Image: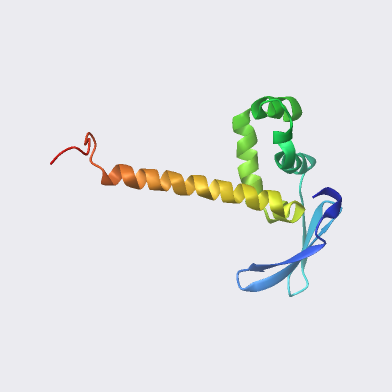
Length: 131
């Protein structure tokens, strides 16, 4: 989202509503009791989210772009990305990208679960032609 960051959002956490503001890349969280807590996305965290927004527009393969831009293996890159997807700060920084990636992750998980369920229901070695 860059310059068009959402100024605040309300999040429900364990029955309490908290106000969260993003100011200059720092997440400031205020509970109803008035306590504040700041969490900051690192520059690399923001760069990863920015990259995920537009990597496909480049002609180079994604793994090559990741290596050149972040000097990370694709495996390590995805480990960091998965951690980011569960951080509220990331959702405040770029909610559209984070939600899109969370939906993709959820669809893949569901597909794996369905595959595992199908494998446990179908006996091993069965061709389905038995009468």
